[in-house]
Length: 107
Image (cartoon, rainbow, N blue to C red):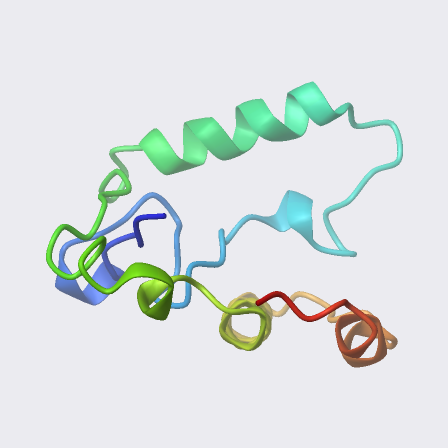
């Protein structure tokens, strides 16, 4: 499970340092019930490959040597999502923290 290289370290592709994909379609404000999963996946793939400003890149050093210690965790993903929402002015769902708290823990 390689991590993406943080934007500040040469990464891109609209992937934040915490691993969240920064895209309006993944938010309450940008979501449309008529959007197909195929369309969402295509939009995300295009964003990750976008050269404006840079495409996403994988972090090489430490990726596999650390095993699961270097995997993204739920809390890290939640914080990255909240940061992206704040930066772009997107609405965080009112029940988001409760929804995340109800997720089963992964070991």
